[in-house]
Image (tube, rainbow, N blue to C red; front, side, top):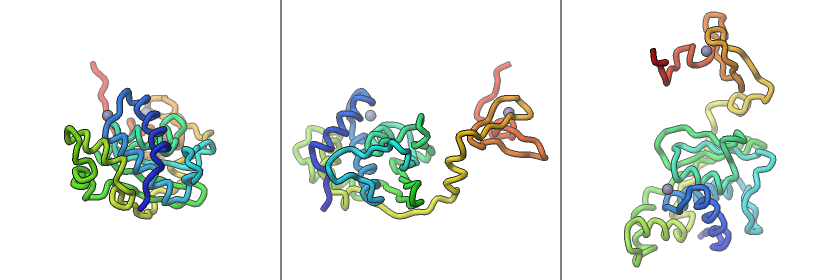
Length: 203
Ligand SMILES: [Zn+2]
Ligand SMILES: [Zn+2]
């Protein structure tokens, strides 16, 4: 049975709580998911120190925003700004961790039994919320997290692109980086001008 060292876990919880301005169960879950994923990729230092992602070796794709994402970000040392954390809003507290050196990827999500287990791991908790908060720190990886090897459907080259990639939209004139332009009828367009619209200008 695998459980993070309590002092090590506390270090991560403190950092997550600092970013999030309080501690809540989903941050704990996010940290546990991140640690389980790192362990599955053999990237977790065994000396009890947090994973450092200085070389951006790890890419994390998290499937919702919110509290769990903060926990995952702390455990995996991934961030949106460093382009090592992507949010795909599927509304799931789940993530795929990708070792960009080897191409190996694992998806982690809470095991279906994790909610029920919480009560038995924290029977004296003053509320359900507290039960999750405590239990998610105590349930072993094997019972808390489902880990499965996966393969990304998009190549890492497409996903990461190149730092110097730059294009200009033929319709709006805005700059497009990271090869996110699309070519329609021979014209280079941004996704918005190509029809992928998430806002409309007010008159
Ligand atoms: Zn929260
Ligand atoms: Zn455009």
